[in-house]
Amino acid sequence: MSHKYDIKDISLAPAGQQKIDWAYRNMPVLRSVEERFIKEKPFAGKKIAVSVHVEAKTACLARVLRSGGAEVYLTGCNPLSTQDDVAAALVADGMSVFCVHGADDSLYSKHLHDALSIGPDIVIDDGGDFAALLHTSESDKAAKLLGGCEETTTGVHRLRILEESNKLTYPVIAVNDAQCKHLFDNRYGTGQSVWTAIMDTTNLVVSGKTVVVAGFGMCGKGVAMRAKGLGALVVVTEIDPVKASEALMEGYSVMPMEQAAEIGDLFVTVTGCKDVIAKKHFAKMKDGAICCNAGHFDVEVNINELKAMSVSDYEARPNVIGYRLSDHRTVYILAEGRLVNLASGDGHPVEIMDMSFSLQALSAEYVLKNHASLEKKVYDTPKEIDDTVAKLFLNTKGIQIDTLTSAQEHYINSWSLEGE
Image (cartoon, rainbow, N blue to C red; front, side):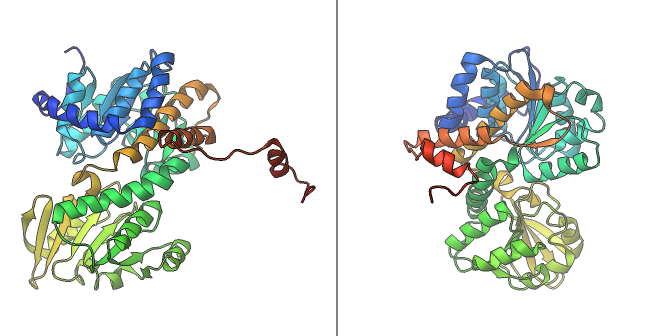
C-alpha cells in the first residue's frame, strides 16, 4: 500500500469493517450528506487532518470527507478510545491512519504529528490537541490552514482563550456549540454512553445507589438524567450558582464535593477541570466507592494522589483498578480516569454521532467555501447548517413539521402589533 499509516495490526481489518458497516447503516443523515459530496466533490484537491476518537462512527466521517474529494489523514484524540480493528479497516481501504490503542504519551504525540504531516488545508479537532501543536511546534503548518472545526467543549474553551488573547492563528467553527450538537450529543449521547460503559464494566446495579455527578453542563445534565431514570439517588456538585440552581429545580440534591464524597457510591466527573476529585475527597469516601470520568482529559480524578494514598492496587475487573488504603478501604477507578464512555465502551450511540459528524462535514465545507472572509476567530456553527442537519434528521424519521404562512412571517418579523 502506498499510503502512510501506523496501526497495531492490519489483519484486524475484517472485524473493523463489520463495525463500520453497522454504523454506516444507522447514519442516514451522514449518508445524505455523502450523496451530495460524491456529486459535487467540494474538497477536491484539499487535505484534511482529523483528530477524533478512532472508532466506527469516526470512520464513517473520514470516508464521507474522502467521498467529497479530500485526502484524509486520521489520528485519535485519546489513546484509550482507539479501536485497532477500525483503524485497520480504514488502512485496508487505502486511508492514512496513525493510532494504536493504549499508546504511551510519546507514541500518541508522534501520531498527532504524523497526521499533521499532510500539511492540511482544514483540521477537525476533538479536544484541541491539533490546536496545541499548531500554536507551538507545528505553527508553520497553521500559516496555510484555511480553518478548522472543534468537536468538544474542552477544545472550544481553549480556542476561545487563544482568541481572547489574540493568539489564535486560524479561524475555527465551534461545532460543539451547535444546537444539534450540544443539545443531543452532549446531553443524550453522553447520558446514554456513560451509563452503558459503567454498567458493562462493573456489572453492578445503578438503582438505589447514590450517584454523584460533578458538573451540570449539557453533558452533566445527560449523565444525571439517565442516572435518575435508572433509579439512582442523584447528587450534583457545581461551581456555577445558576447551574446549581437548575439542578436543584430538576430535583437533584446539590452540595460541595467534600460533602458528597461521604455519601456517594459512584462518582462521575463531567467538568473539563482538574482535581475535581482529589486526596481530600478520597479520604472521606466509603469502602467500595467507584470513580470515573466523562470529561475529555484524564485530570478530573487525581489518580496520582490516590496512588500515593494507597498501600496496594489490583485489577478487580477489566478496566477496573482497586486502590487499597491504609484503613482497609478500597476505592475503584474505571478506565484509568479517562473518558469512560470511550475508554471502556463504544462511545455515543450511532444515531447521535450521525448528527454530530454531519455537522462536522458541513462545517468543514463551510470553512472551505468561506475561508477568504473568515477572520482568526472562533465562530458559531452557522444556523443554516444546524437547520439542515435537523431537517435531514426529521426526514429520516418520516416526520414533517409546520411552516409559517407569509402572513405569519410578516407578523413575527415586524415591530408592529397590528393585527393582534
